[in-house]
Amino acid sequence: METNTKVVEYHLEASAFRWQISSDKIIEAWGFNKQVPGPELRANVGDTVVVKLTNNLHEPTTIHWHGIRLAAGMDGTDAVQKPISPGETFEYRFVVPDAGTFWYHSHANETVQMERGMYGALIVEDPTEEIITDAERVFIIDDMKVDAKGVFTKPRWFIPRVVERHDGRQGDTLLINGKENPIIQMFAGHRERWRFINASSARYFVLDLGGREFSIVGTDGGLLESPRPVTSQLITPGERFDIIVGPFEEGEVFTMDSLPYNRMTFLKAKRENFATIHVGPSAPSVAHVPHTLRAITQLAESHAEINRRVVLSVGPSLKDGMDFLINGSAHVNDKPVKVGELQVWEVVNASLMDHPFHLHGFFFQVVEENGLKPAFTAWKDTINLKPRSKVRIAWMPDNRPGTWMYHCHILEHHEAGMMANFEVVADDMPIREIKAHTHKHHH
Image (cartoon, rainbow, N blue to C red):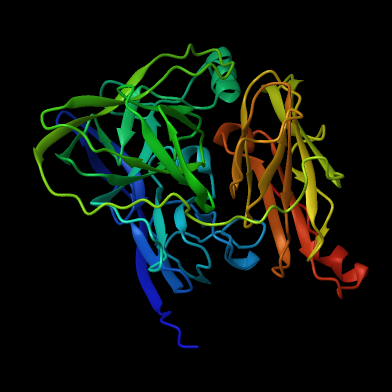
């Protein structure tokens, strides 16, 4: 069998720089290759991606390859990698086995580094895929909390600090691809593929295109089984959605908004405008979106027996107002799982606010949500849990032993304790070796 796989090489430099987000606003960003978002990385399924990262920040950093099923040592967390010191270079090398919309971001001091712009898209294409569109765009959603001068602010007093710890950091400077209020030009009659990535610290983004219908064709782990027409879609921090938009009429002007979503925060939800779409002259279309995109084999029945419960909760703390907990503790070491042993986890949100749950390195299927079977099957790595809700997820630990983690993707909640490390262990590994492999997570 002939393979067309190749090595795709990129160089990234992490540094601080001035970044213009609008005609009148410049911020002191941190990012990759002096741009926000960082460069868009592209590869084909099966390619080996090599990324040399040089750290020119004044503090250590790492890169997590969100959604990529890679070897544990390349996952970019401090559980598997010594953070890259200022002035040092580290080479990430991994095969990209799945097509889809992925992304990369700092996994060190994330509440500061990601807030300032340390993220970018990693798009993996499958040349045999049957979706044909007239154009494709990647939209990275973000918001920043800066003052009128474009300076990043930190809450100084106890109550504002508690509010930010509780809500997560949400700002009024709304960015699409690092710019405020961009104008998106497209041709009338065209159908385009838009890949959305929510890179914000805590913002729940409910996509609305002036009430127009669009079709969801993919999410975290690639294509759905068939397109799903909707008029809005919630995209939580860490999640991705691929949609097909159009065709539109010449002269149409509409906005890309986020509809209000009440995730039970102190901050009141409101409709917010992120970008404006201008539809220009008509052009012929070559678009073709088949009704069947792919088959997804179901891992487990909705009533499958669970072998782990993960409870997300919020508890009071004298020092910080509140702690964010997994199974009653902060920054947890969870039990190991065995390669090849189907995992059916019940993830419970015992708190009174939403949490996006993210599993590193593996895709899961939601088999049940609050006792109901989901409307469709999809491969996910991030799922939103509403207050007082539970989901049952199924996933298969393939042969990639090592330390992995799961956490709430609201960055402030992760930092405040809502995360756990766990080992994936091969069958033939003696228990005493497993113990040696499990080390305390230092925060």
